[in-house]
Structures are given as structure tokens and as C-alpha cells.
Length: 429
Image 1: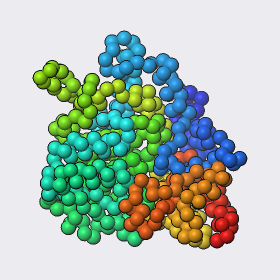
Image 2: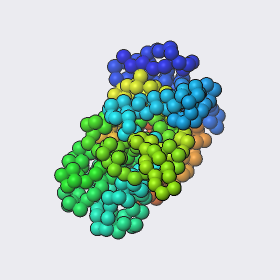
Image 3: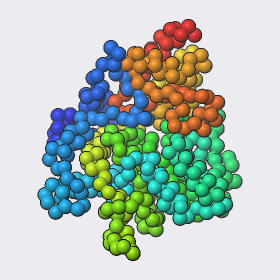
Image 4: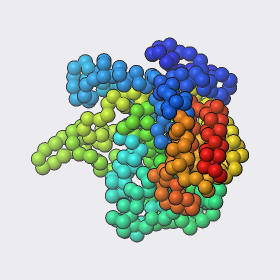
């Protein structure tokens, strides 16, 4: 039976799983103070977790506790507060390593977010290993964070950027994969789960082709890590990036995992204090992993609070999180599909996708959809979702997106659908 910390502090454990592979969402909702805030006279229905998740009380308390009890700089001081802060920071690193399959904690690099994690690889491994005529392969469903760095790198190094297409149903099209990934391919960079389509990439098939040609594989896990079990000891990628703020933790904290041999061979990303071992006017030597890539004072308090977010998810059980979202995604697709005019983008099969559901109405702009829903207390995202090439591929200028998480239930989906029906009447369509 999954368990978690209670809402009123640390140490008390209570059950929250109402049935096997099911979450007691009402009890989960009670852990999130923001969910009781009325929005425009309505209860808040938060359906924008693909942008950022809400924070449980234990995470908020962890930030406060750090500043109240442990505030000091890390790795440098010998006094009690410095040692306490350092241990809390490194405890989170060890926890992250365990959360993603028990990898070596020295392979866990803290950054400001998944975007910086990917840029770190582009500006270190990429600068060292990509040359003129080399190939970088991405997919057509990439977020800008896993697209722009490779476009810029390819332009700078005169490399070739290639794309794996998607099908009309929103799946990755593997029919030409053997022609796209070749002996000239040095890097394959792809999203583990799309933030627009919800599509889960067929990583095993793509990695197998990439490895046969000796290519390195980077996966953007910003959408996958919060919503499904991730085991980096078996996944087969070489780099994996994700963010704290999409998985109940604070903003400003990202993770880059990389294979130790690759990280050790890469030059540093930032320069300053802590990332060096010895500094002279004519010679500088770099520190060991992970410190080589963590120059300066990091976001200590939020890294420490990320530990509480990981504990919360672990106590729920990531298998339960995934099962809950598959069930809720299935219900949401069924209900949205029953509304005249609503067109859902991406796969229809919940086992092949996550809970980020993009949809359109041919008669109403997504921005108007979002504005109307906000008047009913319902928070969704509207726009291109930082994936302009993908949205253009879909033949759209923008989409509306409702994204689900652990604190959502069928009642939230019903509220969304009722509001969409009312909206269509309001706009006379």
C-alpha cells in the first residue's frame, strides 16, 4: 500500500491509496493549498500541469524549514549550518539518483531546469563531438528546449539536422528510421513524452538503431519523469533531462543525468567557484563530478525542497500515478470527443500517451477557449506550447491544452466539458 507524509508536517504517515492502482484524489487535493483558492468565483480546476505542477504543503514547508533552520552556503563552510545545508543538498542528489533507477549520484547534475540541462550537453558534449557534415537527429514533436540548441549547434558547426516525422495520428513514424539515422549520425535527441500530443516515444526501437551506428542518445524527460516510472539503468539513453517544477517541486531546479564516461570527458559549462580543483594564473584543473558542472552558489533551498516532492511521489507510487493518469486520460478523451467541433490532437490510446491533451475547435480560437474557461475557474494552456514547428505540422496556429496530474479527477474533466459546451453556446456555434 502506498503511503505519504501527512499534510500537517513531517513524520506522520497516512494511507492515501483507496484501491489497488488507484489514488484517493480528494485526499491528495487537500495537500495542495492553492486548490482551495477561488478563481473568478469558481473552484479552481487546474489543468495546466504540463506547464508547471502545483506544490503540496510538504514541499512548501520544506522551503520554509530550510531558510528557518539550515540557511548557509554549501560545500565550503565548516560550521554547523554549512554542514547541515550541504548534507540536505547532497541528500536530494542521492534521492534523485535512486528515483530514476539507482544510478550513480555522481552522474546527477543539478541545473536551473531541463532547458539548461539540454543546453549543457549542447555546449559541452556537442561542441566537442559535432563537426562539419555530422548529423543530429530530432523528431517533429520536440519542445523548443530540445530543438533550438540543436538548430544553433548545427548552424555553428555546419552539421546536418534531420527529423523523424510523426504520423497523422501523432505517433512517431519509424518507417524511414533506417534512412534517417546513419553512420554519420552523432546524436539523437528526442522527447520521452510530448508536451503537445502526449505521445510516448518508442525509445527502445530508436535507441537500437542509434546504438548500431554508434550515436549518442539524449532524452528530454520533462514530461515523462513526473508521470511514469523512469529507470535510467535500463532505458538505454546516454543523457536524460528533467525539471523539478513539473513534478511537484520548486521552480529553478533541473536535473541532467549522463553516463559517467561521457560527463568526465566533457568540458565544464560555467566557470567560477566550486567547479575547479586548483586555480593558478597559468593553469586550472577541474573538480570531480558532479561539481565540475555546478559552478557558483546553486539554488540550494529549492533543491532541498525537491527531496520532499520526490518522497511524495514515491509514497504515491509512480506505477499508481501512471495508472491513474491513463484511466483519467481515457475518460477525458471520451468526454471531449463527444462534444461537437472538438478535435483532439495526438494518439487516442491512453497506454501510448500521457495526460497532456491538446484540442481545437474550428470556430473558436484557442486563446478565446482559454479565456472563457478561465472565467469558470478552469486553468488550461493555449498557444503553440513552445513547439511551433510541431503545431505548424499539425496545420494549426495554436491549440488549447488540458494537462492532467495526480490532483485531477473525473469531476475536473466534467467541469471542463460542461464549460466547453457552454462556451460553444456562448459563441453561437
